[in-house]
Image 1 (spheres, helix red, strand yellow):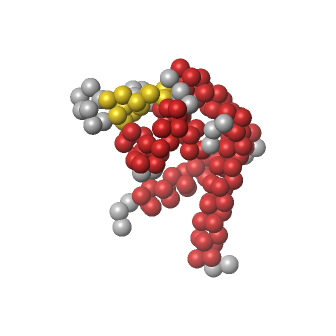
Image 2 (spheres, one colour):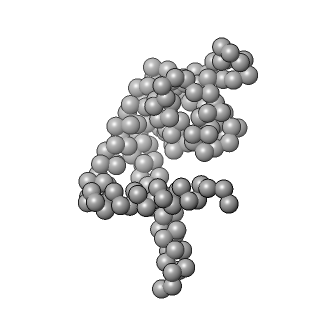
Image 3 (tube, one colour):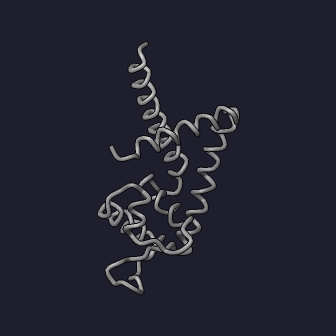
Length: 146
């Protein structure tokens, strides 16, 4: 196999791992009635030190603002988030978890940790560490302006 073919195989494998990872996470979180689109914002909001703006959340998730607004509409109707005007700039909407949202985010976190633990317990620490280092390098190189 040529180096180019090996690189292409690596990229294909990376994409496949991503798809299977998302599927496994979605299956483990299906009991909460959430999809990746709705559980991911809950986790970002749960981790946030202070209420995030809709724009900040969109940037963290790597989505456009209109997609995040639609996701937040769903989460707000479910009673998981509230949106309020920023005290400094009324054009900015700050998003915050409700108590119900916090409760669900905790359940999501626990369920996702079980999936991750099941996978990562089966991989030797040194292999996991070197794989993570390699992926961080690839991410950094691909993130640089061309």
